[in-house]
Length: 374
Image (tube, rainbow, N blue to C red; front, side, top):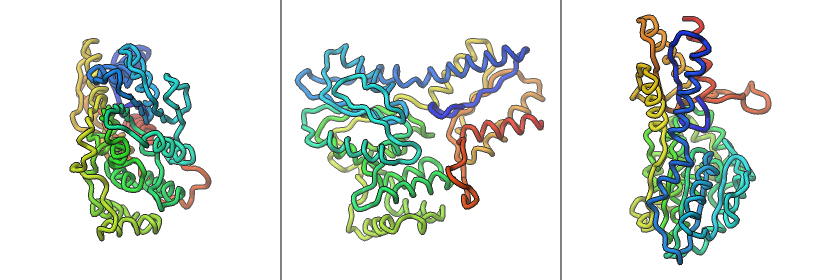
């Protein structure tokens, strides 16, 4: 399992330990290649049309931003399309593939000054969009934090605190982003509103189970299906409502009373100018791994049930499934995909930074512990 591709665990049994390791690496590489953002972006953009006289803008945000932007620039240059401007925001600062497109480093998993600056720059770039402009927006996981900035009237520190609470809450990514998009400048379709009236083509590499564009990266170019009642319910069920900043509670109350508008609905005219496609997903990665296993004449079982919930529990359950098949004499490849969660609980006894590691590591360690004791 790795953090920058869809969560994936592969296990199999062959004769020699060395060949087992080589085979796992082979299958792992196949999974990564199956969801490689660069080739997927290039293939998807081949269908996007723009006239030479139109201004074309490029925005790429997320962990895969550089790979997606580089592929887009290469394709557009081959087609003779100049790029008027844009921005790339990723966890790391790399050289931009095009002079007019600025590259920025955002902060992840918690927004900070780099994310706030990147969000501000996007606001400056999107001002003055024309109806004949074309915007290409490339979205991947992590974008919520990388361009995370609070709504007007809220403090930066309050948004950071909200993110901290949510990351340790044990909520799944859908619920987390339902809350986060409510309070962030570009979440819940607000980027689409800023780009209007330009024609916007949004290409998404999903890191969320179900691949719903509204859930991925907090849906910057997608209408928000959640109401303020949904958000308050999530916060109450997770015992977080009383812990968020007073300004955020006041905002929710104002939306309830109709004093402040809801996040953009699907009926907003800005979305008439937006097309959205999910071009990469966990499913593609698991399918590629399964195809490689079959090519190597390995029996394959690919689970159709997505991993979700507590990472340690999922790790133990996967180990149990492996042990059960091994005891029955089955030898082959088992593949799972999905996204788990970790609940940090009370952090009062933790000094300094958050504990190191994450969902992937916790799942793998839990599975290893169960396998070692089997």
